[in-house]
Length: 603
Picture 1 (cartoon, rainbow, N blue to C red):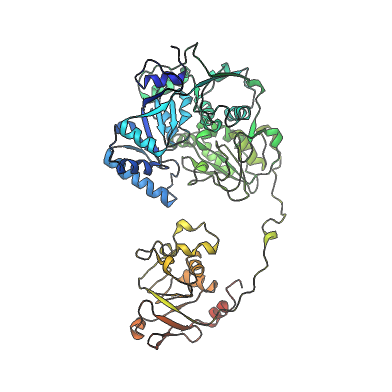
Picture 2 (spheres, rainbow, N blue to C red; picture 1 turned 30 degrees about the vertical axis):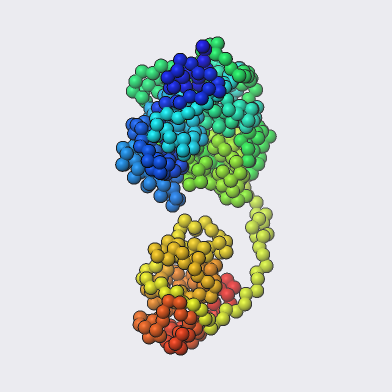
């Protein structure tokens, strides 16, 4: 029985002479990968079900979603996975390595005819070298780790032939976007697609990677390229052994066949929200941009960086435009540095980050803000995927040219003078009329919380993982959630409460949120033996009362947790209302009192 590429690979890994579409078989997996995204859940599934790792030598972690560990949850997951890896003898490609799917090809973990699974939905990028790769969920990967194999339904195959020469200026990314324009997001849904043609045979590995990466956006199981001599030589060098090329039989059966005229393809841009909603660069030209991004598993290879550098060399980014560049692996980063590309990028004004997924994953550079217009080499521009702005997808050539021009354009139409941002009011037009602030009372009463710890810093008060919050109404819930023993303070505190603490309260960073979180909760004041210098200023400027007391005051007035007190800020006094005992506080000076009375420094 004649077979397609995917049928041959699945048959070879399921102990069968042949397989057919719709058949479900257990497939032995050559490389089983979990990323920092999903990796912790894979480990948890194994531990919860008492499962062991089948073959640690075929099992890997890749930390590519957040190689900086800048997000607390990612950092925790990475550490959790490292501990499991040490215990089980599993190889970790850590935060210094790069994108896991690229590492699989570049380190010989995958090869023509092999099988590869990962918690990465773009694991089907392995089709670039004629390997069967699949993205899977946490339970699937856990099962593959424990059993060495996983069930899979053999898909139907489609044969796609690109006829004619490739036009000048049409990059691999443009080919992918033209295919998306033709097939959309679902016409290839569930199919294994094999791509043929004279121009296709000549595609480099980096170009094949770009096109294969976007098979997911077309809904395809995988886009297969038949390995040519250069690909075989590359993979043999990486694996250190002789390999046998995999190819479909000449008379294999296909569910569909398509022929497209490659010579009609043009440079393309995907419109915000949908990778398959495409227009030519010429149609979109002159759209003003705020930022640009070059990287991702689709376009972070050395050829992509060379293309961008050739356009950026000797030029500067358009005023106000930000360009972020992220190589896909550390080896590519090092090669770019050796070739002088990094210097070109920096001289142009770009930010170059360490290798990883970048904008596609929320934990690294490449994100954009509300209303921001970005042109990106990523593979997805779903709403919210790369931030809260608008993302256009394009080739590295188009992105680099647009970053210099200040608007979307191709490298052959970069203007002598870049577009600049006008001074038309955007934010100032949204200024609201300032509300009338009632004068702050100088005499307050409330229930006391005694938190008698020295050196409570601002990370304990309001942790840095919440610093992106700008709405004061949302801050209160996180008050003290990083202070051991007081993590539930926000749930227990009530409006009008008063916190009494010890020395050096508010040490650490300058974050205003460490004051505003108390305002958000309705806490009336904080009393301490002393305050961090910046914290004291922040509190007064926000019209949040803080006063200091001398050691021995609590014993002097017999104060216990939960007692009610009355505080006179002008006189500098405190009364324990449970026993009427009074004592002195250090009063605020006239400047501080004046700021508090008028509702804050900006009142």
